[in-house]
Amino acid sequence: MSVIGRVTGNLMVAAAGIAGVSVVAPAPAAAAAPSMPSLVAYVRSGDVYVSKGTAETRVTTGGGWARPRWSADGRSIALLRNGQLWTMKADGSGKRRLTTRAAAGPSWSADGSWIAFASLSCSGGPGVYRISATVAGAQPQVLFPSYCRDEDLPAEPAATAAATGSLSERLRYDDAVAWSPDGSRIAFRGGDCESIYDACLSVGTVATGGEKTVAAYGGGSRQNSGFAVVPCWRADGAKLAWTAYQKGETAADDQPVHVEEYDTATGAKRTVGASQDRELAYVDSTRAVVTGTYKSGSWVMVVNLSTGARTPFHQGSQPSVQPKP
Image 1: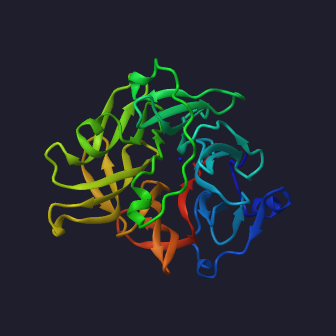
Image 2: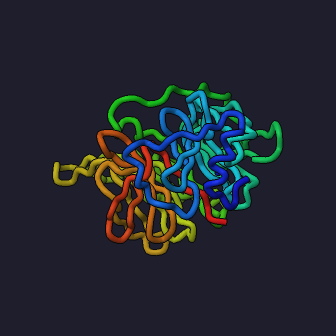
Image 3: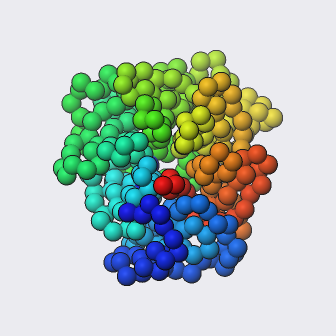
């Protein structure tokens, strides 16, 4: 689990002259795609596209790309290719691999100097690392679990094949991370809470290494199972959303794949969007984009966070919203 600043329709046309970038016609059902205040990056058939409305620009080729994430200045994107961490400029140029260590869902620090990602930790479970976004040949540094910070880095694990099976099975072990807008915290799957629960989501404080559990399933007297994955912060840090699934003690307690929103001040939670919505990314305080099921496939949908109204944007998944300049 991101040198545009202000991108207009003219850039979409200009990008056609850049190697590895092609302008493609929108999917037919997306002809009335809503206009967005900034670019949305998303994945379709293993390549990354960006769009603000009806027109799309493909900014990768060759397939194998996943989990694009915008930098805070909107000029770069961090992303995965075949399970390894890369960056590129917002127009798809300047692609660079940062590390050969197997990685999951990247996220940028607020100042753009670091990228956080998940990979195997010294504990044998998922851990969170950061790596310089600007220094060539930089080595990853451990952030969580904090007791691994003084340990040698574990041997580089091989990149694993993409998960298969049902939607819930594909999402269950997604280790995408999310760095808070103020740079102080990172949300990630797992953590110290896994010593108590079967599955959990943590928010870790970068400076101290301390962790807080914000979602948990199974164990610790909880009579349920499930997961919370693919976290995303709202730009003001007041809300944190994630993709969740729950198998309850009874059928009435079951919750299919959905999006939960968490108030970071009060701890209150609510469900947003529709059943099968996942991978939320905030547009602003009133709207978000999610991956949803539409026309029997995965589409990026624009969701009104107050009314729940949903509008199809483009066919694809794993959306990320470019911060407004």
